[in-house]
Image (cartoon, rainbow, N blue to C red; front, side):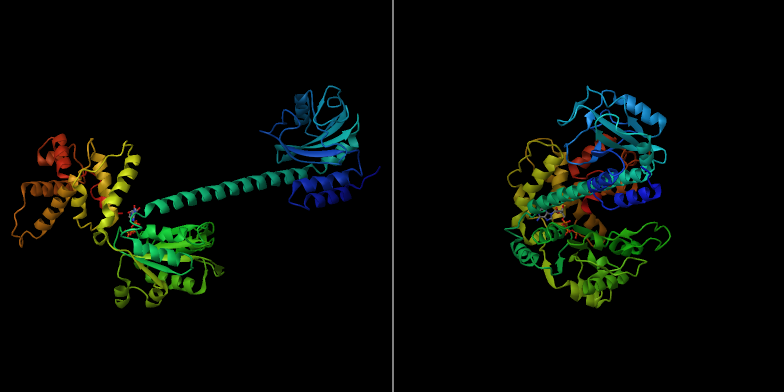
Length: 518
Ligand SMILES: Nc1ncnc2c1ncn2[C@@H]1O[C@H](COP(=O)(O)OP(=O)(O)OP(=O)(O)O)[C@@H](O)[C@H]1O
């Protein structure tokens, strides 16, 4: 039978590119090839590490047969011989001697013998897999068949490579979806467990959270630093219909002014020097979910204009791009600043303020909800003990709660959280007394007194003066205690004596400043 090779090539490539489903492709190929050769089954396998698989049944990517037998692949008795032959000759292998043997084990009940024709598939010089043709009976394939198949090896190699890439793409996608689900659940459990005082000092706040969560309304959360604004934003997201979508956050005060638009809106490739690829901004990432803009009062005026446009039109455009990109995002903003005052001073746009202030939620400072303090302390003692591997988590000494409740907590819950952590770092058994708080208070008072030394009439106590002096020296040495020019040397005492004094006075080395700020 004479074959028009061009027509054969054209028809084969057409069939190979007709579907993304490789099993459908193989079925179409099988039907077409049956016009030119005896054929009952076709299968594609990839080459593990550039090798033919140990058995022709492994690494199978797709299979099609004519329905006479479910699967006529057989375990070759000498797979390595085929392997060596195919790799050495770099051309299709016709199985006349090896697979057509009587000792092969059929996967399904089938004839005692089958013929196979194997086509190695390469991309450049790399062997990536094999195309296997099967026909029942002995010596069914000849050199013409091999020749014909060799002419379509390249498109088959491409098809196999695409299948592999597509499969790994799907796998990566699954992994990402799974990771996202996991992280969302983590966030959810944190958010749920986090709001201590929800039924006490934060009761009114939580009522507002429940009311607004089910809507798409923009929310503005206001409150002093450390009152838990982010936790409330989280709670709104997870109580809303968007809870399975992303919760994306930006701290407007923590990003340099010239980078903020890029972070919010992303950029197109080539938008500026160094923009080598396109980048999605946080607005786009928040699509279908909630976008939390923390410290909104720090947003530069020029970004405020762009944000206003997004709130009005619900579309963004990337830096360096004209194309409008629709975004479905619920906005929650938070601030510890007086935005009204900022508007009056011309530092915050009035139109944006109106847009944000649709549903304000104000979180009271901790000093106005002292009833939450014991529960917050217990919560953080349990949580931080776990983190610090302290088991069992220690109990609080009688009388300590009263003392902690009478303190003003200017840093609110964050300050309380840090104080519990400090207490646990120093913990040496027994009950938690939080004496450090008293000493720290004294230190702070001492600093205040010394700042007003001329106007103050109260003399510093010895502990206060010592605390103040050590703190000043530590500041001079950049927290260095040991060695030349360390605080111990400057104070003329042994470093371990200094450490002991610091411990007693409640001065925490290295972290004393960091702990008080976010
Ligand atoms: N009600 C609460 N229950 C449990 N933990 C809380 C509560 N409120 C605040 N926290 C914890 O206190 C810390 C500070 O909270 P958060 O960062 O939400 O405060 P914030 O008001 O956003 O502060 P800032 O204005 O400085 O951004 C966090 O670790 C948070 O988990």
